[in-house]
Image 1 (cartoon, rainbow, N blue to C red):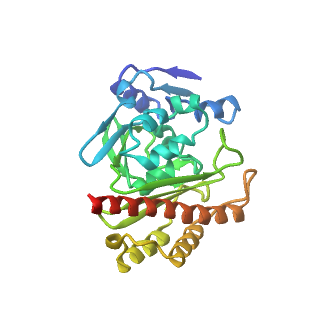
Image 2: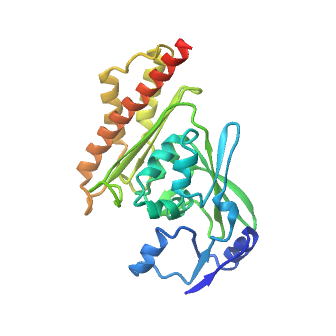
Image 3: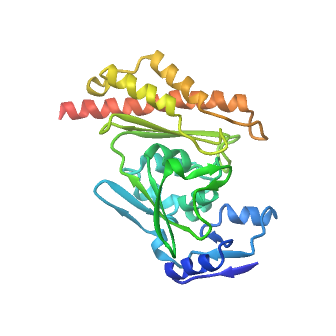
Length: 295
């Protein structure tokens, strides 16, 4: 196994073009596990740790440009207001040591359905910035996951950043694991309310071959909130609406039985998480609305 260590982004792109099978490594929290267990033996490792731009972020007027190697710890400490769903998901990632090393770029590159960042990325509606010597592409997150541990990138491309809309409403994330820490998700659920567009987006992890959205649940809830005038009134969501949303979210799953949980349990758990996170986000929205009215 050869170790490539470019000193700049341009050198990294050139190395990836010359060696398309080279496996990028930054945090190494996924790659090193596979190598240590001899599940993967790449011909080349492409170390990106000398490229400082990948560990930087920029908060714009409407979006956050998040470098691929920005650690989960940095997201938790610095972007909780702008990216609350992703910050909550970051809290659940393994241990403090891994949160200090791992980043969203690694989750996207590996494209495991169990990656903790995916539900928050899907519910935010972000774009992934990938680049090669041929140029830059922006891939909508909805088009990024194409199969089990497969993404839409070309062999010569590297992930440079993720562009996420700044939260315009409450966001939540929930995860079920076999224990409280250092655990791969049995299943996970993310939700984001978007009051500016009066829409709802979701993300489901570890309950289908790829991370997915519960699109029917989103459409149902978006219509229910609009037709019932809930955005204006801030009234409580009826239990019947929450129940139907949960059932539709559960129906979006296509899980398997494995050592962490059964398919039946995953569907059930996703429905529970959908109902609970909807309740949490809507109560937060109602609280914000009441505060605005008082002001």
